[in-house]
Length: 113
Image 1 (cartoon, helix red, strand yellow):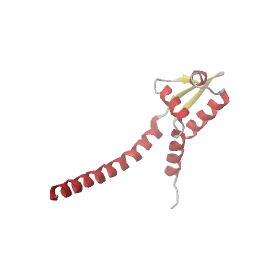
Image 2 (spheres, helix red, strand yellow):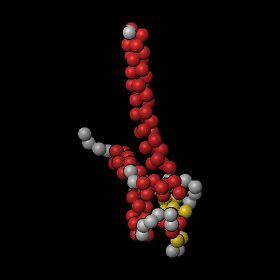
Image 3 (cartoon, one colour):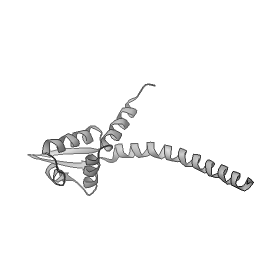
Image 4 (cartoon, one colour):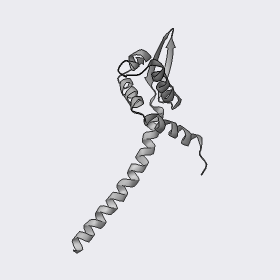
């Protein structure tokens, strides 16, 4: 099966979200815009390591960065998160329907016992 651009974007989002540090950075940004140094502060890693995580988030379309002189500010860009949420919601509906059918089947078996 051939991947299209939408699949590639979704792959990047789920890859970015697969790392705890990147999820923590997104949680920090959920409170509002932040500088790179303030995002790095709570993590026990080097600034270059944080910059690498921010690069993954940026490439996935999860954050936007703006440079103001020597200060780099980051903020969440919700568009790709919304796309991932829609993908998850599609499968949630499917699985909920499957579980509803299973529940009905099990109730039927239980009634016949």
